[in-house]
Image 1 (cartoon, rainbow, N blue to C red):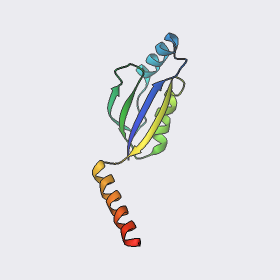
Image 2: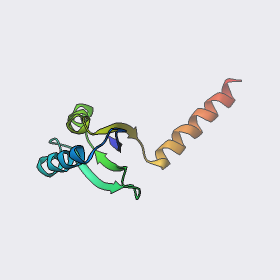
Image 3: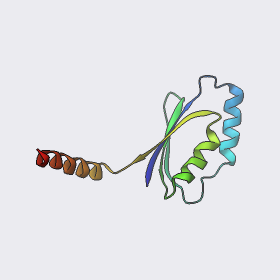
Length: 99
């Protein structure tokens, strides 16, 4: 399954928290089976996004939980837009055929 993980610094984010977050990130490695395809940071420096493939959603939870003390985290399961378009088209066709 594909996921987009987002993070944004908490309102009370201090220099001390930033230093600790950087130290934790330096020692962290993804849970086994998680393939972090890309990390990108927002140009305002207040957060970022990661594109991850993982078979087990619990492993995503493990990786997100490590950083919950510093950031507001979200993890969204996603599908390729071609798959999404196909499913939406099939649903629309079903609605038309149902009356």
